[in-house]
Length: 283
Ligand SMILES: [Zn+2]
Image 1 (tube, rainbow, N blue to C red):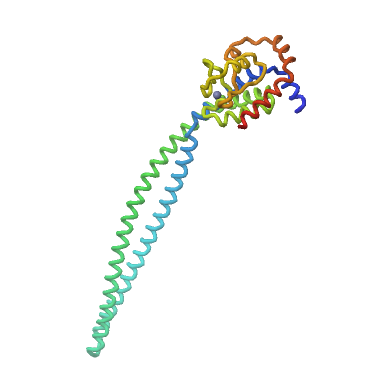
Image 2 (spheres, rainbow, N blue to C red; image 1 turned 90 degrees about the vertical axis):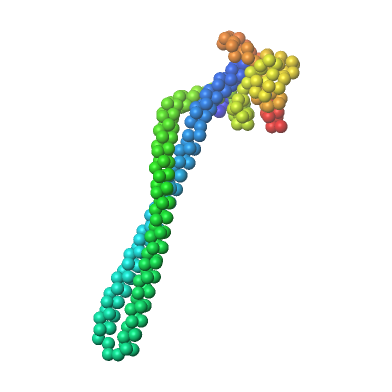
């Protein structure tokens, strides 16, 4: 397989490789555009999902805390009932006392239980106050949760619609990009990908515009421009490393017969050219 591909690549003229690279650049830029369109949405959806999950956990935690406080109130109420039962029992016992000392002793028990009731009532007030505060926090969290859920639903819908609108197009472009990449030797494709990754605008192949590199806008020396115009080898910008292409080539009609002649002449040239280029991009 690899050998067969090699011969196809060798038969491709520099001119055709440049055209293929330019077309590849065009297709890859369209893929970039689709991904930019989708852009922040997948991230925003993720963030919202995290926030919703966080709020749900928080709400569960607050609800559990409120439940605990309610349980505490119930147990304090039970303690009060117990104390009241005891007091009632003590009061009955007081009726049957034989002396003052017994009466005083029972009175102390009653007083103790009354203090216990007061203390429990105080705790109940504190717990109720706590619950009130927690309920306010809970309401805020629930309101925010509802808000975020709506946001999430909306963003998810947006993302789904963009994905469904663009997925087919993207798949086709990715396939096209793969086919075009087959027309150029892997080494050159790798260089192309590397330049693209490093370039802010994702452009690895640019045309010469007004004697300058269409990528970084630095002036290109006349001799270099001539080399670019002859399409005898692949030339990169000495400043930004982008592959330079003569804009006239882009508007040229395909002439297969002529290309075959050029291809035969060029069989050995492209390798040299890519070597020079590879060294340059490494700098
Ligand atoms: Zn440049």
